Length: 166
Image 1: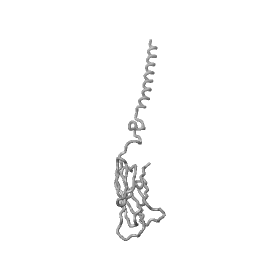
Image 2 (image 1 turned 90 degrees about the vertical axis):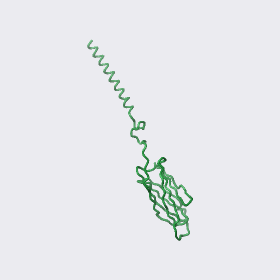
Image 3 (image 1 turned 30 degrees about the vertical axis):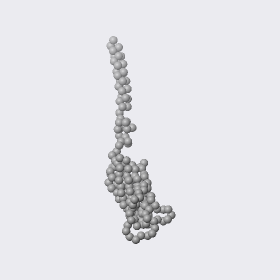
Image 4 (image 1 turned 30 degrees about the horizontal axis):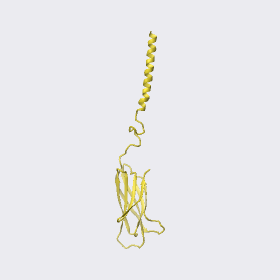
């Protein structure tokens, strides 16, 4: 009878060990995964939107358009430590200056950069002008997902480009 009891105890121990090891797999499978189900530190975690710090614009050069179709309204956007915009604005003559207006919509994660041109006082050449500019807009906590660049001249405002970060 003693031999039988030992065998039964051995079988109970084996069954219990099998149940525990079977549960161990279930417990391991129920832990948070990296696919975002339970906030397991994945890349899809919602980040706080960046904060607009400020910006500046430099008029690089104003001149007469060359007549070969070069000039006109154009802009390019680069995402670096800041949002950098380089562009050209066609003006009625070369005696124009540019100013920077910018706004950030945190809900849409979108920056709007408006380069507004205005005539300067003085005698000017009688040619179509082109104003070349460089602008930089600074943020804390990251950069916006989308940037829209507009050129404004009096009552006319035109979107020149819209760029999204990849």
